[in-house]
Length: 269
Image (cartoon, rainbow, N blue to C red; front, side, top):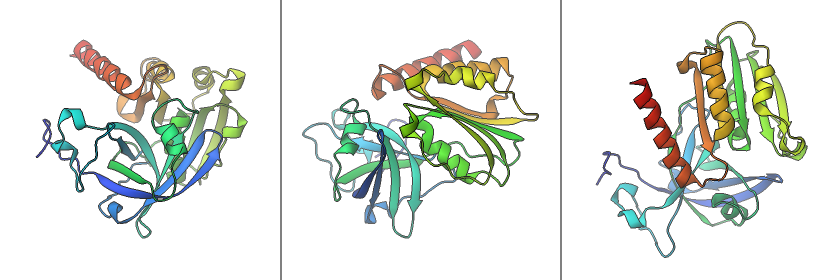
């Protein structure tokens, strides 16, 4: 059976193999097993999977297709960038932002132990660095850091890249590996750094830019307006979306984002 949009969504089941605290607020979870045999990686550096959280008291059959579930049994889902996948070892790497007891997935990831089950669907994705761009702009917060790290690793040798990452403080800095000529600016909430102001202050290099801007919806909205309207960057040269919104859970944010998208389409029609 398919859902109302005609899509089949089979669920993959993996087991936690190990976890690692990369920074005070970032937890790496490596999961694997035969359940990932069907995982088909794509070429997107923002490749993602959706991790499933079943309602209390609901146990899913195996195999499971989400399209077969009645509405009251559908899981809550959280989206995470695929930081790495080893097809030989069948290991999938996901990084989770953890802010104590707040949220759903962060506290869950903090309590995971080897052998715990992870249910997921995917992957999806839409962005990868283009070799025909004259320079690249990567902007995000902790939620976008895995995708930014992936993009830097995939950049062509010597590519001109400007990177802005907003994190809590210097303890959240991660090594970023790249063959590109990348200028990385770390900004900190603890010292009230302004991510939007930092990007606005950038003197744009000559030529055509390809931009990746993801993270909290507030700064994403401002930078969308800046890049598309003020700077005149072509829409197809920009990957830009809010991963989350301050003060809203994921379900609320998805509803708000869908309503905003519908309103924008109405205005542009």
